[in-house]
Image 1: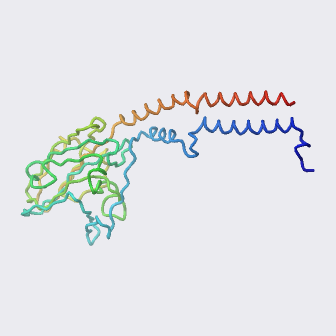
Image 2: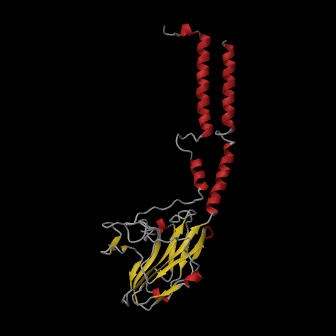
Length: 302
């Protein structure tokens, strides 16, 4: 038989409504007390996960250009090398020889992943380049401004590290910002100074060291941190020689823990504030109050 309101009786009906309402209120308030009420992932938990990984800026993932792409330049017919266009690449006029090279800056996050410096804005890395490159518009000195994405059409222009069996060098992802040149004599000595960090977040960046290779194609199967040397070890220069008229150096920079530590401190303050807001003890107090009211109302209709 279908139950009607008269069959249930007023006391039982009201009590049932109160019980259902109380259950719904408890469920709703409990959800508010635990989450952020957005129905999605809790941003606080996501931030905490980032801090636990000790990374204050996510890796910048930019695939290297492939043939047919705008910034793909050319590759060797035998697959021994590949070249990408770089806005900071210039040819000396007059051309004095086959000497070519790169000076690059690589910025890593705390996990050793390439980044573009969004966490260290208004900060510069400067490398003095000496007389041999004074003709180059972007040299004397070579200045890199962060974040790269705000200051350059190509934030990362070189694939300097990693390996991919289908590529002559690199892993297929851009990682460095470089200065390039061509046309120096084959007995030229290229000199460069130590990288200088200046600006708002200079103290948040450490100079890991320098990876220098001369007189051969760039070998990318090396670790930018583990294989970096001191400036004194590289002697801050190389001299071209016939049959070995290429040279490169990468200044390796890495974020220290200061930015991540600050994020951790801010997150702790936010967590403490939850106890004073609707998501903490106030929410639990409201639950207790509703249960008590439901009990009183139920007792009146027994």
